[in-house]
Image (cartoon, rainbow, N blue to C red):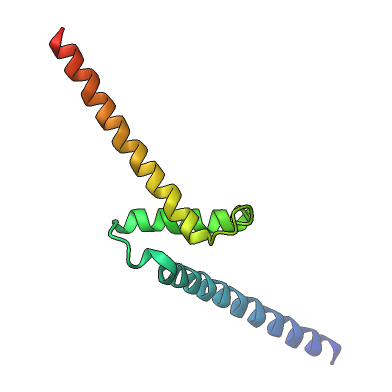
Length: 105
């Protein structure tokens, strides 16, 4: 009887563990969808860039980096992403400027 009870309990625990894994996957899916609703869905960037912004938002939130400025994490993530894009553009302009000055010599 005790062995039967133990097997039943083990089976019940296994089913709970399986359900927990399903819930974790569902939570991750919902978290991604919610992130898109908080700013990335309307962005004009590509899917890869929006995923970067979403991950950056989660990173900011995980370390509570939004607390210092009391600014929502998705706003900070978009700002930082825009800073990176602006820096990339500045590098292109700098490269073009140096190439023009070398051509004039």
